[in-house]
Length: 363
Picture 1 (spheres, rainbow, N blue to C red):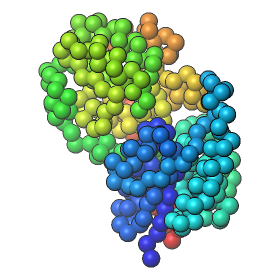
Picture 2 (picture 1 turned 30 degrees about the vertical axis):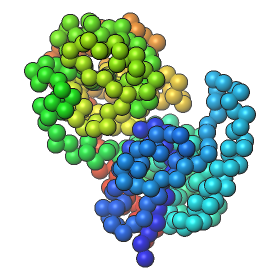
Picture 3 (picture 1 turned 180 degrees about the horizontal axis):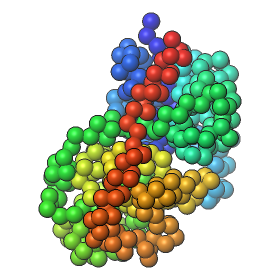
Picture 4 (picture 1 turned 180 degrees about the vertical axis):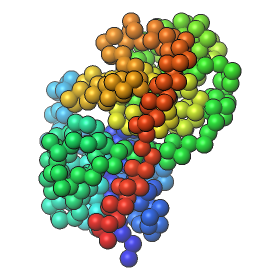
């Protein structure tokens, strides 16, 4: 009889894309396996998971809103409602295992599965574990981590260091630079800057690029600019009369963007770092300063300390980001050094290692 697996979590591309990579790796091992995703209604996973060919069920759940306390009034009701939704989903689907990848929906699904003695697995992508994962880790079957030294958060016997799963089309990238540039309608003879503020965008990065757009173009660069939804309309208007610029709220074929790029500006979430290491690109990181335990700065500094990247603080982006871009564009030797150094961090088989461990545990 075929095995059934629930993958719970989402909220951002950093949770969703590794989850999809794990799902594909599981199906490669067992083509009859049934996989169901559980996410949060209104979040990215409700769109991206079906696009990847998997069913998804949405929970009425949200996190604590620190910026607007009034928005938390309905939170207790949502938590209670989501518990009943989880119970219904798990009891109907009858999974042999549940995998949590982080995000609002991960906690209630794994908590309920653990109460029912269903094997649970956690993937912790960051070097600082989230509070929910730490609580769940005590009763998890195994905890897959991106890096060494996670014994401070999880029982040592349960940890398997796997690295972070990278999307298959990036891990096995065959797109040429010319193909990538052509897909964005850009010139194959010009140096190309790729700006990605994460799947939801990054205000400080977008504002710095907007303010310095003319300088960037005058320096001979062309631009692929993923803005995220909040800044998309403003960026589109700003670039309307500009040649050598492609802008949109989201890039669906990220392998084309990485293939096209000569320099990348990005946040330093764990998944972005993993993908850029595999793609082997010179990068300027602008860490999101409000990430838990400031883990994005920790992620970026691991590479900066190995002469594998540049870092500009979020607060300094308006003054320092564009000059840093132009300086790197004018320094071919430094770009070569970064490509060599960042490639040493590349892990391309994390999804396969995770799938093997899960199948081994559930038989």
